[in-house]
Amino acid sequence: MPRSVKLDDTLSNTKESVKDYYSNVLKSKDDLQTSACCTVDATPAHLRPLLKNIHEEVQDKFYGCGSPLPPALEGCTVLDLGCGSGRDAYLLSQLVGAEGKVTGIDMTKEQLEVARRHIDWHTDNFKYSAPNVDFREGFIEDLKSAGIEDESVDVVISNCVINLSPDKEAVFREIFRVLKPGGELYFSDVFAGQRIPKELMDDPVLLGECLSGALYVEDFRRILRDVGCLDYRVVSSTPFAINNQDIEKKIGHIDFYSMTMRAFKCDFEDICENFGQSATYKGTAENSPDSFTLDDHHEFKTGEKMAVCGNTAKMLSETRLAPHFKVDGDMSVHYGPFDCAPTLTKNDSKISGGCC
Image (cartoon, rainbow, N blue to C red; front, side, top):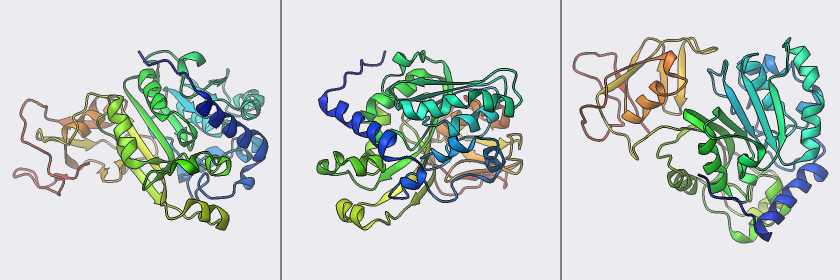
C-alpha cells in the first residue's frame, strides 16, 4: 500500500505557489518567461492533424515541454497527471478511440474549468456517442483521493508537471500503484545535470517556469529504484537555453534538459543481462510501419531481428507492445551481462544488438 500523503507547511506552500502561478500569473503560454515548458517542434508529425481537432482555448492554455504520447494506445485506459486545460487528454481521447478511457488529474481549478467546458464540443467533434474523457481535481501525490484504484491504468502520462511536485517520491509510488502489471509510465519533463540548490527551490518564478523543481537525473534513477522499478529508458533528451537574463543570473551554470522517459511495471533486473534472446518488430503499431523506437538506442526495423537483454525482452513481451513483436528465447540460460556493443550471432548475420 502507498504511504499516506501528509504535506507539511513547506510542501503546502509550494503547491500554493504553483497554483497561483498557473492560475493568476500565466494567462496563456505566451506569458512563459523561458522555453522550459514549451520546446520547439515537440509534436510528432502524426499528431499534428489531431491537434486541429482540439479547441483553440484548450491549446492556448497548454504549458507542456514535449509530447509524451506513446504508440499503441487503442482501447487503453490512460491517466494524464497534471492535465491542465486538457490538450494532451483530448489528443489521447482520439488515440485510445471510443472504447478507450482518459482521465485527467489537476489541482488547478481554473485549468480544469477550461478542460471541462469543452468536453461536449470534443465529443461531437470526434464523432463519439459519449465522452471518453474525465477530468478530476486532485493532487498527483495522492491519486487514491481522486478515485484512481490499484492496478486500474494501462498507461500514465505527464507533460512537464512532475517537476512541480514537492514530493516526487510520492508521485512515483502512486504511479506504480495505479499501473496494471505490464503498464507503462511515459512522460516528458525538465531534468537537471546537477541537484538544484535549496535556496532556489522556493523561488516562485523558477518553480513556475519548471526550473527549480527539475530532478537531477541520478536522483530520478534512485527514486524509481526505491519504488521498485529497476529499469527506465530515455526516449529523447534535448538541452535548452533559458534565454532570459534575469533567470539565467539566478540559476547560474546548471544545465537543463527536456527529456522524455518511459518505464514499465515489470519484474526487471538492475542491469542488462544476456539470456540469448532476440526481438523482431512486426511493423503493426499505428503510424510506425517501418520501425519502432523503444528508446534512444533501440530502434527496431520491421522484420529485422535484434539481440536484446532480458529487461528489453520483457518490455516487448509482457506489456501492451507484445502483439507487435516476436520475442525469441527465454530466460532459462544466462550468459552474463548483456554486451552493449553491436553484435552478430554465429548463425544469423541479421541480428544486431544494443542495450541500456
